[in-house]
Image (tube, rainbow over the protein chains, first blue to last red):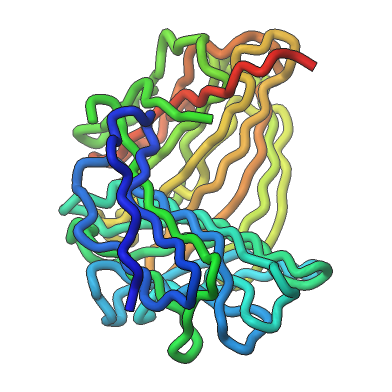
Length: 187
Length: 175
């Protein structure tokens, strides 16, 4: 069960980047999904500082929109692991899954840093393209990378599901997952 | 640091015009351009970005990119713009798909520094994709008063848009 997200009181005091909701739990965190996303911004930004409880050195974020778990996602990424640089892609996946985060075997206290930008998310005539960057530094190992992804739907994004790819994973205590709206002129 | 919207440009129909952000306020610390862009042709293009109407060969750039099967790096000397690269060619994919990019321009009002940009951009067209990070430089110390988008004159698709933001920093004095 997810803790209730924290909604700020007054968005009017902020600039272009407006906090919409944040998950921050003192205990294990399952399925921190953002629902009923306001359709009043130009772009969305998801900022994650997190770690998973799976017995892995490096785990992966599973990202879905609008509860769509069909094979409607494709992505291309560029990743460095400290000794080599690679690029790979997927053409028809049930989610975006290339973004790395530390798992339970990562050095103690290490969290991964992720920023995901979702441009023109409320547009109903275009597919949705995202661009993300991540830092998963583990003192000599780990990865850092960039990805771009396509969700082949023209629907406005009103829900973002932040899952963990491997098993039925959970986010560890202290993981923070925040959603922001980015206003353009006149919004 | 706070970010504020300054200007937006939306392309209502396919156009090869140069688009400009003009009279940029000199009151912010940094600038950011968020781009949603495509071209209707069958060839991948790029969006050239110039400053203060300088279209001379006063720019340079480096890039690190991944195309889904390999990673590579390149440099570009004495060119006429920095850029948002990998403008998806909708003629070969779908008119529903756009590239995205975010360009950061730091300390844009400083008159002692050459202006350096940092951009992440790319697209995924399902059957192919590109993602990259680039650095670019305008070899000029003038404060940036205007920005020319598409100064290379390729055709931009309807629905392309560029949003300019100003970023502030706290006033903590000098060191």
